[in-house]
Length: 150
Image (cartoon, rainbow, N blue to C red):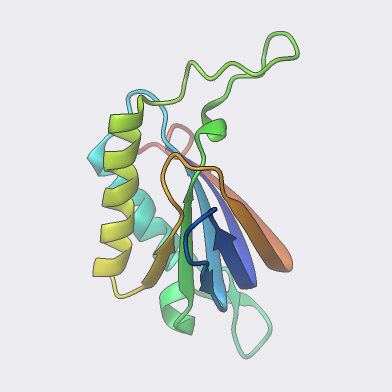
């Protein structure tokens, strides 16, 4: 699984025909599920996202987690994170998980984050979405279970 995290002051997601979803201070997690990903990886990433110390403390050091600051989480499915751009100029999406697996792991990560006590908003899986982000920092972190051993 691959996640691009953005620390935000606020974010809003819209999908045509549906009410907007928004968060205040917190994280936007663009989540890509790749072939071979597992429930254990979804659990690991939910825990990592919620406990990653990337918010400032009283000494202006990144020492507080999403849970510590009472921040919110917006999880956005993003199959384009399952791309391979090694050859040619057109990305290959062969690494992206099939939709049924990707949806199940996306939902699992969301539920695990909620179980940890985080307020979570979501995008609409498989839909075209518009995401407005007010990045804070900017702080952007890439998590990839293939690279962090889970």
